[in-house]
Amino acid sequence: MIVPTLLSAVLCVSQQAAQTGSGKPPAGDPPDTHPPAVSGGTPTVTDAAEMSTPGWIELDPGVLKDLERDAFLGTPYTLKFTSTNNRVQYLLGSDGFVQRDSRTRGIGDTFPGVHYLFLTQDKHGFDVAGKFVLKVPTARTDLGGTARYDYNGYLLASRDFTKWGFHGDFNVGVSALSRQGDPGYDNQYMVSGSTTSPITGGRWQYTNELVYFSPLPGQDFQFTTMHGLSYAAHRYATYSAAIQMAIHGDIPKYQLLLAASFNLGHL
Image 1 (cartoon, one colour):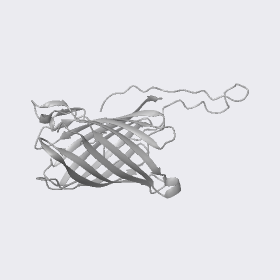
Image 2 (cartoon, rainbow, N blue to C red):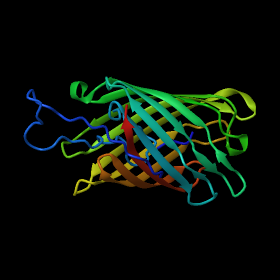
Image 3 (cartoon, one colour):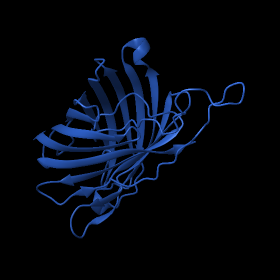
Image 4 (cartoon, helix red, strand yellow):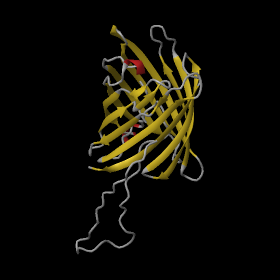
């Protein structure tokens, strides 16, 4: 499963004018009519437990490019919408356009999902959430598709460890992966963790990550690390770049990751 996280987007602003009892705008600064902060950042495998801004549609597009061994290119994206109670987030992701070589290209699989926040950091010390993602088989078999559904479940935990912004995200997950051309499913387990540190100035952040995927029949386990930077051009638009490196497993040694996050509009 390619993790869905650079495309252009139109930013739609929902404006509300604050009024006093006399019908006049309040004194002081004018009301803030900009979209709220996005939740996205560096394109990690590890997801944050906390939600995107309630009531807003967020788009997280990305680009994945193998830097050696093959010509793989992916353009995944995820749409997020969080309910007004800030507990339930609906997800719609896709592998987007996928190219495996000069002749093999097309649209990848689709990933609807739901994300539920069980505990919040202010009351319990960690944000804790669960996420379920279904793979809908929309990719051709020559692009790696299996023509069958996959099922993925995750437990997510996040915490701000310092007041100056050192943040950690931690995931465990299990997937039931369909086999291409064969009946049955293979179970794969995942454990990951990432930390994010702000860089002096407030707009830049550095993120690193470790990810483990358990072995599958005919495949050894995978262990990767990622190092990346993100830049907040606005609070409602961030851009990121990272290099993922394979520590173990029959996977490309280096992969370039690009990502962005935008608020598209308010519902």
